[in-house]
Length: 353
Image 1 (tube, rainbow, N blue to C red):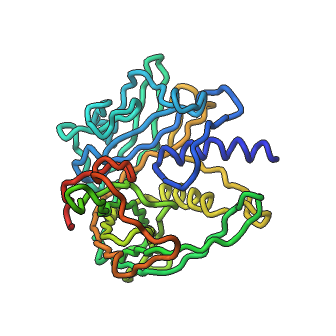
Image 2: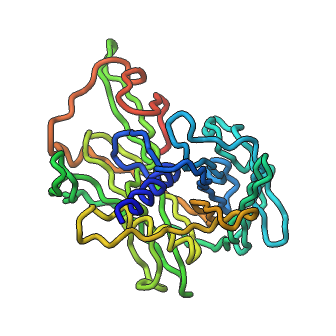
Image 3: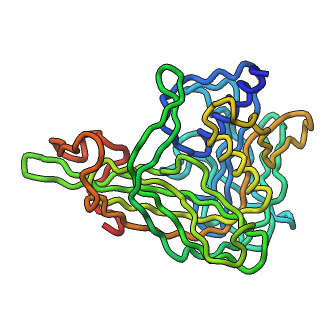
């Protein structure tokens, strides 16, 4: 029983890494317990002509290590509609996708519209082929507003002795407000990106920089309209850390989902929410919408999603709520561009600041 749970957790962890769900964990080498190389797919196409969003990542479950994870050589990657019209994705043309295994839909190839169904097709150089079941690209309502609340959070975590303990932290809970359409069966997912200002003390005085931290979701943010059909509702999408007293910008992307895609994300969120106690339900077998067309017995992990997209952002003046719990923030010394305190730093002021 334990062996099955461990193997399931291994491939799930690989999938979480691909989907960009950034939990606070130490990097480690994953051992899958087998030599089978199973394809893992993370794919998305939207109704927006955005190569930074319309892309597919391909990798393998084994052998899995930090050097050899991406191992797909020159595949043909296409998204097709129900009439067979294809949109070809290409590898490594954009600065944001320099790693191998990431395939983007360039602007000249984009033909996606809401109301049509799309499927992913992958053909490897050795003749193996893979596909996804069709995904209907449904419309999504706009975000009515973005709100936040400064509050204390209590999480159950495992300490160094392996015991479950309460951990108290402060942060800003961010919620979106959405007017659900009158028809039933609407499904939503949200992703977020964070940018914050910080300062350093240099030879010429205080310098200002901004750090782009990427996705700040630590858990899947998704819901359906079963309890909110046709009503205005709020849903939490992320927590902004209360660590340094500076301005923070959160950008929220709201995606439409099919019922099948929502079930995939719901189960993934359920896995993330488990704390490892004996009261947790056994892990569900998360099935994606991908399969091998050349070998029906071969397993394929991941999901290809077709979504309409809308987005908004909110500026959060964290300095109004300082001082925060914990050690006081001390102004670092040196040029803020080269202190390497935070990732992806720029001295060019982003939108909203």
